[in-house]
Length: 74
Image (cartoon, rainbow, N blue to C red; front, side, top):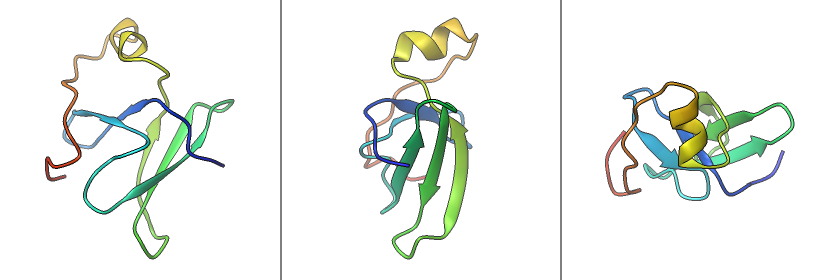
């Protein structure tokens, strides 16, 4: 998996950028499987989500999520 530019929805229902998820976390993305793994600095799996290339893709899936900045706590 790699870091791909896109979005996912966190456990609070917020949309976050895969390249900067906040909380000191990092993302690994599988664009084919549409999978996002959110990992701690030590590599522990913190959260799993669906990969969306655009915010419009999230909306098209019927999900209402506000895009938050990386400074917003998890």
